[in-house]
Amino acid sequence: MLTPEHWLALGRHAQRLEQVPLPELLALEPARADAFSLRVGPLYASFARQRIDAVAWDALLESACEAGLGQALHALFDGAVVNRTEGRPALHSALRGDVGQGDVARAAAREARA
Image 1: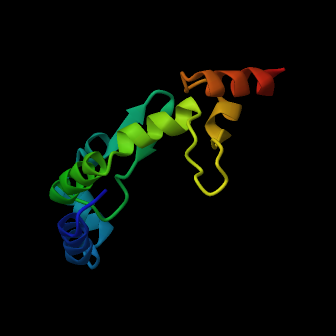
Image 2: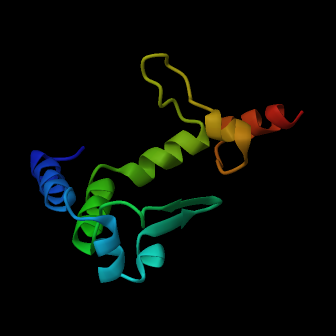
Image 3: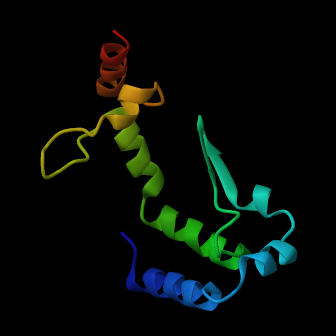
């Protein structure tokens, strides 16, 4: 869970960058395409054309780690019960691929291919 300090820090970065034109950020950081993208298995996400800089990116990744995002994604992909209100797994990713390694996710992926 993120602390109020994390939320405040992210908010300060957003305020600091909200009026900075994207072309200016692109000119200041020519390697944005590599610096502000990530790949996790078959998933690729690029944030290069967003109002973010290296300091804000580091704060965002630190907040994601602090919040346990990596563990939460593993639980989601592996078929753990992440939808607490319904008491069941969210199997969207399992039905579309084989990223998850949990028994529930593997069974859902097999069923989707059948």
